[in-house]
Length: 497
Image (cartoon, rainbow, N blue to C red; front, side, top):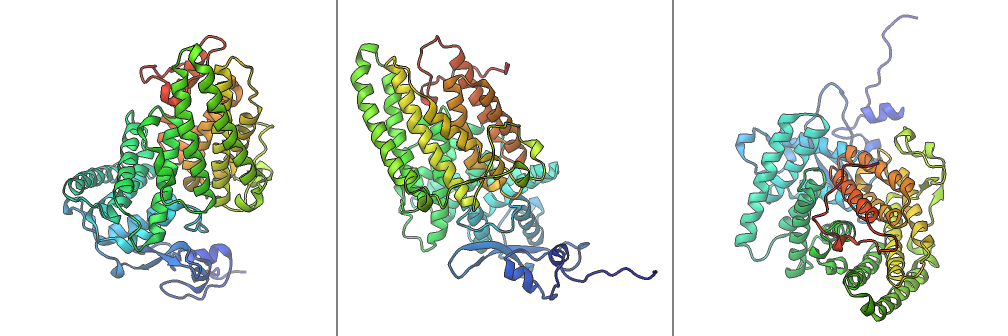
């Protein structure tokens, strides 16, 4: 039968979901109820809009929703970049929709998402914060869309933000909340890079944020949710650098217990902080003469076993309560539309979790467990015993089983930092045991993380190869090197065979 085909006048989201749209403006009721951005009613036109956070009744931050551009606070950026308020608003909204692919994220699932969702309510109040966020968004979108001009402008804006930060720190003895927020943005910007200096640059911003949190009272700020997100983001970044890079001793581990609460993640960060001090003792013991090691090793083992017992009682025996439920095995095809992207391993059946928050907590628990068991393993090797690696290998395997869930298109950007930290710890277990097959499995994940936008993943991979080659050059029976005692002078080998 002829005639004009029916075309729904509803918004793009309702048409995609094949449900009736009420045509409400600026947002339809169905999108408001679901907490997703309403794209409007004409796919051919891009409505310039800002992104603001909507608060649920329980105080959680849901996905931002569009508002008219006339309501946007102006961004104080240099005029030579030719970015109008509308263009900047559109750019930020596109960044949010591109970086955070999932429409169901909440602030508790991802502290970085909460920070970005809150930015529009602070825009225009701090030139430093405006430049740092818009610079990051421009560089990310420039790379994602292969727009070299946008990426170049983003780099210029980012550099101007660094200069603004230097001026603030020089003349302001009490950095504001916006300055602390910007330091976290700088960290994230650096994780997107893959230059030779990316680890050192990221470390600089971690140290800066740590100094601000240690020397300036932040609890007086009224926006407790924002402060909590900033502190959480700092703890994840600091943990990754302390545990997995040669710059371990240059980060103050005490930042992991700042603002400590009774939340599962904060408790686990506290355990990791204790592990860090024990591991630094191990680094000192390695440098002792053999005749002086016995007593020091025994004392260290007592501390490790005590911490292991506490972790077992508090977390394994009560895992349902603290971990939010145990992970469930599932078929790989259920988790991603293209499971071929992940390297095959029949012994690594993937897990699925109740939420992204649960998955990240489980990774953090496994990381804490690995650090403890690796210290026991390496300390016993120093005593010329034949240590059992089964415990640390079990938790390394558990981390690998979380990768498929975390690397789904809707979660990979929010889980990337946790996956990097966990994967690097698992990789070190396989280095300890000389398990090349599993080590190579871990290495195959790094390019996937890098392709998502975390350029630092390739540098982390090189660090792992550095450890692998250093371990392979040691004589049989020698203790394996910790990141903090591995000399920077050891060349990263390009021979990966």
